[in-house]
Amino acid sequence: MKPQRLLVAGLLLAALVLAAVLWLAPRLGRSPALSGYVEGEPLYLASPVAGRVDEVLVQRGDRVTAGQRLFVVDPAQLRGQRDQAQAEVAAAQAQAADARKGQRPVELAVFDANVAAAEAAVRDAAAILRRVRPLVQQGYYAKARLDDAQASYDGAVAQLAAARKQRQAAALGAREDQIRAADSRVSQAGAALGAAQARLSDIAPLAPGAALVEDVFFQQGEWAGANQPILALLPDDRVRLRFFVPETALAAYKVGDQVKFSCTGCAAGLTARINFISPRPEFTPPVIYSRETRDRLVFMVEAMPSARLNPGQPVDVEPLEPRR
Image (cartoon, rainbow, N blue to C red; front, side):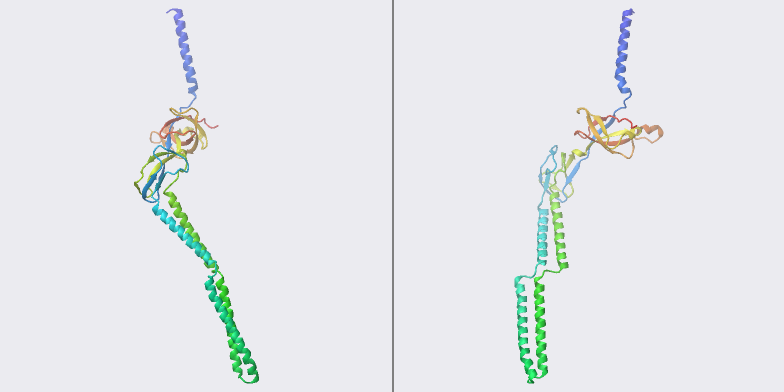
């Protein structure tokens, strides 16, 4: 072989070796990426009572916002219970207000008449006593006649005092314990009304937050059983990454730490914040635990991604450096 060819071959080999070194150097000290996937936890919405589905306001694949109405189940039964509770509240409030009032004017007029009759009786008894006293003193009547007139007068005065007390009591409201009992009935009726209104709102629930409608199980006109899911939501805050960290590297991961990840077709520079680290290890693949298989011991870690992803999508998570 000619010296020129040897020189060219040597230079070519050196170039290949240099390229290989440059390609491998950044990777020799880097740990392999951690495998994981995107996990979504659906939220199943149902009605607490059985009934016909009157309206379905969303379809599978729709995006919903917080407070958006999703479906309505026949409200006739619960609406009747709410109206009954409202009537009971009004009745209890009227009874409580009546307990604080005196009797009606017509009823008070009866007591006024009794007072007037007692006053007239006192006047009559006083007149008789005035006529009898001097006659007894002059000896025309026996002293027993004066005693009878005095007793009649005292009795009339006592009856007048009783009639006036009855008139005063009639103008007052009920006793304090009766008023407290009436107020308690108002509170009880109000609590029943609140429960009826809450159950009425449960048959027309609102979206708790931004979410994707994952599935719709009943359509308008179908009969849904009590507590049977009518649709499933996938809230944005219930979509997270799940990846597995070797036991030897677990100390580098803490709740609140941020990790970087990538996935096919995703934008660059995605991150996620760790919100859960499993307290229990697992083996992958399942093997019998021994010191020789300890390198297969892993812990599941969950993290909230910075971007909305599709459940089931595989991801590669960049390992964190060991803590010093």
